[in-house]
Amino acid sequence: MPNPDERMWSAGEVEVLARAVIRAPSVHNVQPWSLALPGRHAELSERTDLSLPEHDPTGRDRLISCGAALENLVLAVRVLGWATAVDMVPGRGPLVAVVTASGREPPSDRELHAYAAISRRRSHRRPFAASPVASSMLAPVFGELPRGVGCRLLSAGDKDLVAVLIEQASRAIQSSDGLQRELEERTGDRGLPWAGLVRRTSLLPDVRTLARRLDEETILIFCSEYDDRAGQIRAGMAMERSWLAAVDGGLAASVLTRFLREESTRERMAAELRLPGRPLVIMRLGYPDGPVRHASHHRL
Ligand SMILES: Cc1cc2nc3c(=O)[nH]c(=O)nc-3n(C[C@H](O)[C@H](O)[C@H](O)COP(=O)(O)O)c2cc1C
Image (cartoon, rainbow, N blue to C red; front, side):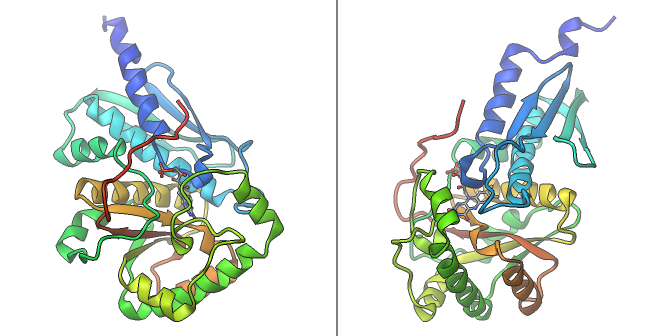
């Protein structure tokens, strides 16, 4: 007869799983998920009550955020020494995925490093240090992406177009009362206007200056073959996997979706940059320009 304790999570394990999920990045830091831990399962659900009608009317960013939380959850189950079976739940219900601990299996080196990076990851919206990121540093960041997700490193030429699109999108954000209201309700690290939050009063650089500044940064675009529920969740998993690998390698990063709100921007970006799918997340990477702050504003 199996040990009854082995059929459910211990109190310590519950703590590890919950903390890993809470630390995931999410749009506007709304943490739009809930976690249930029956038996040896971990059920991650989407909280559709936490909505951002102006920035995220279709809930795409909410699902990307749930994907990031799922990536952290799987890592936590693995570092606890369990093999995992991950069932992505199709349909429109709140349940996103069920992770089942199925027998003992030690974590890999990659998983241990990624898990350790969870508590060090935070959005770096400030400038980066002048040192360029060598391509050898990026190999683990690209790593193994989930099925249907692609990731593109932008070249210097690509950044001219991205600067034009960011400039246009920023102006639209600045003149939208609804978006500005949603932004005002959120506090947090404002950072550089193109790296994060565009307020009405933010001073935006002109397109040429912006292109030059973007050229000093390493920029990745995460794309999904299909812009559907599964594609968005997988893109969130890929984003978090890459972010944690970057942090493990001493890099800092921040992600942006604010400039991908308009369908026309996404279409133009996909076509003109010949992206491997629909663009879902922009990630900027570089070496931190000073000590990295780890203050947590995630709800426990
Ligand atoms: C799907 C998604 C979209 C995001 N979009 C933006 C964005 O456009 N601009 C920005 O500054 N931060 C963006 N973020 C970062 C969140 O604001 C950040 O993860 C959250 O505030 C928690 O802070 P932390 O990353 O430092 O833990 C996004 C995060 C996610 C997961």
